[in-house]
Image (cartoon, rainbow, N blue to C red; front, side, top):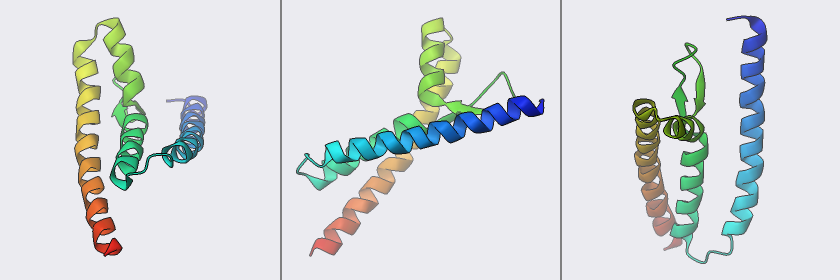
Length: 113
């Protein structure tokens, strides 16, 4: 891969992560209106999973793309196998984040007593 493409790839992910952080901060401020701690953190966890989960690109080796973007694009084009691969990554990330969320609820419960 040429150096210009690698630089563009790095710039894309840097801008994507900065944009996500700004979006996450804005959504966290909006989630403050939710009175239940568990629901508030569940919404934050879902936001992280949906936006940040990557999937490997079949076009270029060792490149990762956002799974929601790639999966949605492949669904529109009719590439069900590739869309299923992206949805699988989202499912695995959801299970991992569910475990983290449950552990956070246990921590919150033990700390509040």
